[in-house]
Length: 222
Image 1: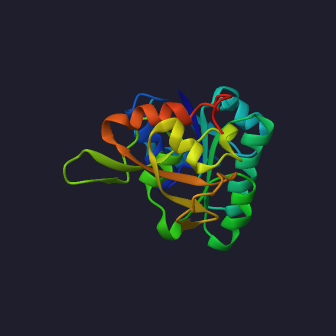
Image 2: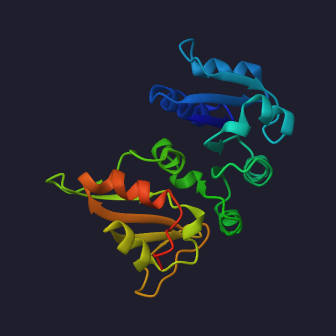
């Protein structure tokens, strides 16, 4: 899979190296060519000098074939603009933006773009929002049998009750992150655009749960 990262600071370079070590194809965009030194000589991905929300720059980085896009530059406005261009112009489904001002996160979540405020930002959290299946669970019980994991959900599930997602996967909702805050949903709760879903399931079933929710619901799901 191809990933495009805007920003080659400490965060962006760490993401790029982690994704490439996982066997993925990676392109990194930064306005300063000198920033690519952080990637190290072993990095084999594409280095693109330019503005991350410029169409030609994004095309050079392979945005048209990207599975996911991460905007992790030092500017909130640049990050959200680039994320919106990636999603709305090029149709990239998996997009995440780093936001310095947590107060803005609620607005961006309403646009359907997951955001991570720097006060609680880690590379692992960003990777969970970018990678499809097989990422590291958030919590594993001492026996290793049960896990809590943030799962990517296809937009087709928006508007469906969480009970429908549970019925389709056999998993249980641990909690939701909505507009930057964790909530315990009630029995009639509906999955909304911008929600981050955290499920409890057996470790052996996690990959199957992720495959089901990464695809649109079938006509029998409700």
